[in-house]
Amino acid sequence: MDFTYSEEQEMLREGARRFLADKSPLDRVREIVETTDGYDAELWGAIGEQGWTAMHIPEHYGGAGFSYAETAILLHEMGRVLAPVPFLSSLLAAEAILAGGDDAQKAEWLPKLASGEIIGTVAVAEPAGDWDEASVAVAASRDGDGFSLTGTKSFVTAGHVADLLVVAARLEGEVALFLVGGDAVSATKLVTLDTTRSQATVELAGAAAVRLGAAGWDVVERVYRVAGTALSSEQVGGLERTLEMAVEYAKDRKQFGRAIGSFQAIKHLCADMLVSLESARSASGYAVWALATGSEELAVAAPLAKAYCSEAYFKSAGDNIQIHGGIGFTWEHDAHLYFKRAKSTELLFGSPQRQRRELADRVGI
Image: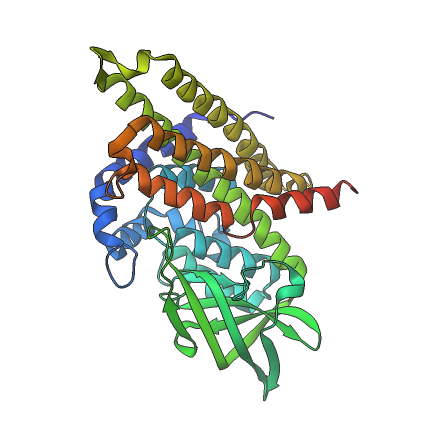
């Protein structure tokens, strides 16, 4: 198991970092999060032109045919700059269709997701905020040759701008997945702590739907594993950047005639952040390897990575604020953008506690 980048992957990483530094500086992020849609349409279009949205999709469906290892590199770099684009939501919609759709559905929707022509998302959680199977209450009923859905989904990433939603609903007592057009639902952007990744409440008042193949909860679990792995890559990128911010400030800030980085307390905080970063990098790398190679170890690696990276990122984001002192505690400081993203990703698709319960179930505890 080798987590080092190949020459081609290193070129991808360097190119992505330059691209995002130019297209998505934090000043631009702050402008975008104040808009109605909450995402950077210009950046999203450029990402599509770069082929990032096609990276993980097979070539015969209009994709680039790379593995998830390359997609993880892009997620890492987007996590470093808090790129306000619906990349994760479309990635997961594509994964649901790949895992559960029939040939016709794959042929219809995957090329559009690969090009970035449409924005996709998945809708599983409901207002209670739980992500487990028992909490799915949205009802599906037969309506002629199709179905209609009734109920409410919440915490739907990019739900208010999505062109296509993959919705988990209960059909005859069992959870199934359905494809719903964005124009068939009423979506309201949520006011959340993290403004860099918009979420929405989606009302399904008899929305017309098409069943996604024969997909059931097993496909949702697959999506969760991909989500946990993808988020861990993002979190490592954010953690990496918070450490850089802390070290830069510790070197520049003078107190009592010396850089605060020379004080033992600051040194220890930075050292702990570095240990957390390297441990998170290993946990995330393990999950990415398992996903990219199709290993059965993904069932353990994904929740492990999501649980560890979530807590490591949140703590390091908080420590970064501590190191910045008084200025770090102002909402206007960039450190808070990372702190808010860290908290939101900790909860998205299941908290660390939920991930640990899943791990305990898998090992028979």
